[in-house]
Amino acid sequence: MPTIVSAKLKELEATRAKLASLEQAVQAELGKELAGLPAKFGFESVDDFIEAVRTATGARRGRRGRPAKNADGAKKRRRRAVITDETRAEVKKMVEGGKTGAAIAEALNISLPTVQNIKKALGLVKKR
Image (tube, rainbow, N blue to C red; front, side):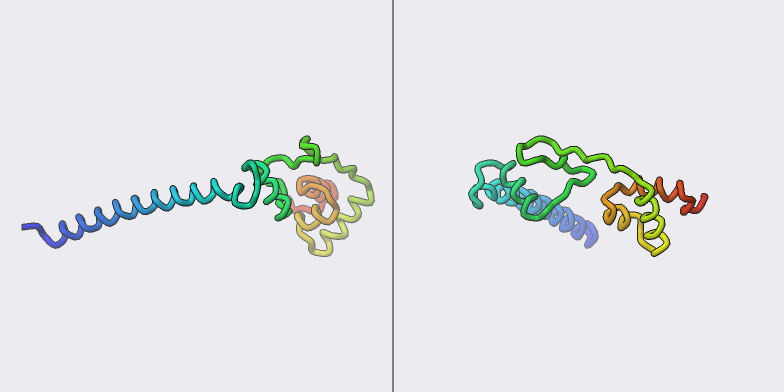
């Protein structure tokens, strides 16, 4: 005679199997829907569709993103920032105003590591 616990364990195992089957079905349907999106919106290739989405959303390159490209398809290269005394003074003023490093970098169009290097050179960071 099976115990209540073993019956519940069998029911649990059957439910897990059903859940796994449903997850596979959902993944398959999702894959079909995603594959059809470019054609649904009139694009001939996935790459064209992705580029249109990036353009529409203003998506920027992230750490794992692909490099941004010019209109002719060539990779854009970031121009090296020229750090002047005025830039250093502006960084100092913004730090004293309570701005974060990321906000300073964006406002001055320089990288966050550059901001950190300037702060270090000016003695605006605490020693560990």
